[in-house]
Length: 117
Image (tube, rainbow, N blue to C red; front, side):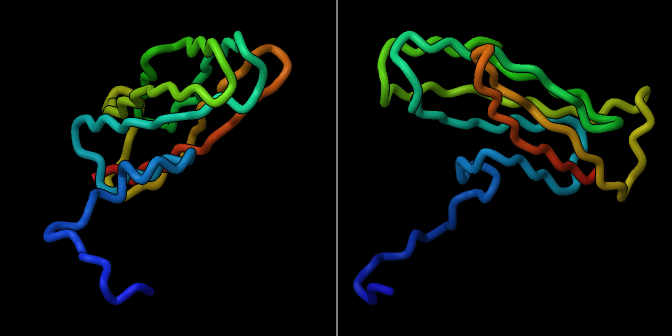
């Protein structure tokens, strides 16, 4: 470690570390997470998202399509998670789902894990 590195006064939120996986503890109500991805495929790539919602949690991703013009281009999207009592969410329970970006040939799947408050 570099001893001259200045630590931030308040540490950044672990929710937005930009890992592909999503993990939210004690979800009560709704929470939105932002992710940024980089196109490592061909120019003109277009990815569509599909979601497997965690039981008792509704999940929405926006935008639903990422269109890349060139290799190395970055795009951001938001994942909104919301407790849905009508779907049987139980307090203290861990539930899992996933989201997948697909261009029709390549599928990029990432897990979603939520504990309900």
